[in-house]
Image (tube, rainbow, N blue to C red):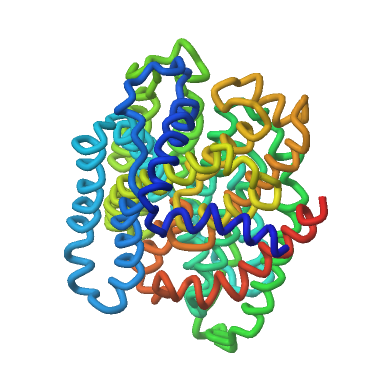
Length: 496
């Protein structure tokens, strides 16, 4: 255990410590080699110019850390300033990093790649948010702990069919309405844990990291086979914990039937918007790197999708314009939550480039490769997935694991062999550790996974007082999620 934590510290502390001049010189060369191998889209080795692969200095993670601290402290200590100016703050910090990349590092590859990932990210979230806003599900029953557990379990299952974002947007409002007489912050937090994250562990559709793995060559049903028991284990423990909490919540209990009467019916208004959701999910697979006939923007040896994003933004527009007014009004639909997510994640995608490159470059280097094991992959992928976006974190650690085994993320045959055991020793347990950690740890903070922040924003928009960034971690992630993550590691990985 001590050695695992020691090894892991090399991966984590790299983000937040300044590098000495001697170390910087050595790691510039390592990062140059690693970034050449990591370039996605099948470019030839050495295709880019040397300048495009200059590694960022360690201090360039300061804007990212600053943004995280402001997200954490703004709503607590300078709420008015933060709510008025968070778009400017996020864009200014992102612009500072992007301009440094363009004019100091002469690196256009990373900012353009980050921009493409952001457009893909916000197109999916915005379209799912707006399309689901036109569906009003009303469960007209008295809220009970068992009914809440059933709804959370249903959400966890369907998150594998329409994604954690789709399931979260579809069910968060009905979940809040069901508990209208007894709603507390813990209802929303456990919803984030279960529906917005851990539930989507079984299919590539479930969570963005798993979908990226599928695009790189991991078989579609691989996650169902290998993630099922950690998924079931994690869900059972979380649902039991939630049940104990909810059983003790006496708010709204004891109201007479004269106060509130229930029809015990489930009604759905705006059913046609399910067709819009189906279009969104179907368009996810229109990836030009998988389907050659899909049109793409070609840049620097890579193919960037645009047809998929056009479809998603079109669905967002038409699903809102054609939605039933009754459903929109009943959901108290507002664009503010998606606006907040859009601006905050501009800052996150723009400022996290140096952090991802430093971690990815080190992990794929000879020194970093020596530290690779399923244990360090689990904790490294997990802890960084909680504070960085979990999708690129998954790809970086999969790249490192492949490189340590002599494979390449750019070779789909290597990825398939790695997923299936093939000639790569211990590769199945390594990939399982990366996959489970990326999804499970995405629930550790509001920014670990896209739906988290959106669910929080929707809850606050409705009037529910949510914990701050640090409050979320201290009051819920550390006492409830961290022990679960430790148990998952002990049961499924530690002694393999």
